[in-house]
Length: 164
Length: 99
Image (cartoon, each protein chain N blue to C red):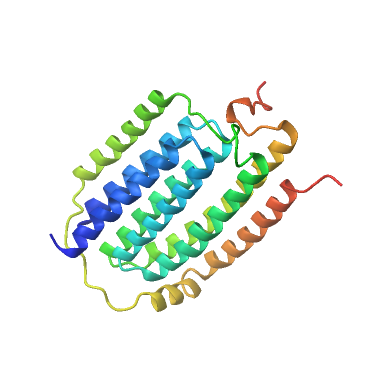
């Protein structure tokens, strides 16, 4: 096995294990920490796919930003110690059946379509290409995204404001 | 590792996130499941971008990451607003709109 295959299997095992821990651990705070591990593992998958820029974005925005605000939300709505943070799951069997059915469906679709073929060689550092694409063909989308972020921030402020 | 490996990994993580969304009682736990599902989609986008040598997948991944961050901010603000009114974030007891 090549080094790339070995590292893929290691990262895949870490990603699946931490994802399972996110949905199975009874402690909500631990679930957030496992989510951070899963997000970092996803970033390493990006690294295996030769996208170091997206690895950085993933670490900064997801593992940094999202995990921080989720921890704040937990601190505001639950006590970090004691009984209340323990959460139970319901309909575990139903959920497992539906999730397994979705996975089997997607995997069954995957083995039907011819997606094989070697990985094309990298034309060089992709980060400048991404930058030029962002202000070139995708410039309007980028501006719309800026508007969306402003609206989302204003909306979050509006929802979480105090009455007085 | 071929494209199949990455796509299967993404499908597995997506299914795990779906399981979390379906089974968690806590609204924040449900949001964590949604995070996992969106994350799996990003793996798909980057894998296709790499194996088809098309930078559009990477650009779209940037867009989805930013949109997810906005979605989490709004979602958690809603959770906090609900908590102020109902003193609970258990999804089963948030039936304000039930007729």
